[in-house]
Length: 185
Image (cartoon, rainbow, N blue to C red; front, top):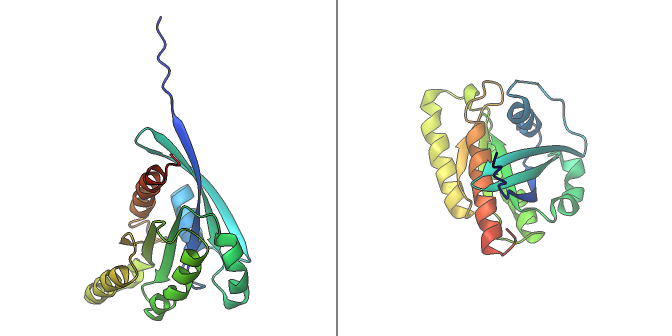
């Protein structure tokens, strides 16, 4: 009997998950991990989630660093976000003002990492927004992504599961490509 051994390359990376408090970052990660809606209480400091995904012939092992968005923890964020290979920045689509808070988070991410790391925008809680309002949200997100040179945006709902898989898959592909360009993969 012949055995075929496939050389699988594992790439271990860190992804920071950032955004204002109460936008659903932790609940979103729990939905991604378990495919269940598990309401979360406010994160104190930081939570971690490690997940593997296949990207071509690479196994991408991603440690998601879910950072508390409350102001009292913000001064610690620069130290926690260092060494990231990518980022997810989240806002609450039912509270448009949370989108306006993201440039500060983006500034810290870029200041303490390679400014070219892939960053994906997540508009969470899309299930709470009427169809009439979605056009405005799409327009605002499109403009924000262009203005801040992000790698794309997705609408998600940790409650219903809508759109959960796509941003993680997309960011995984971008991170593998980024690491290949930098000679790290």
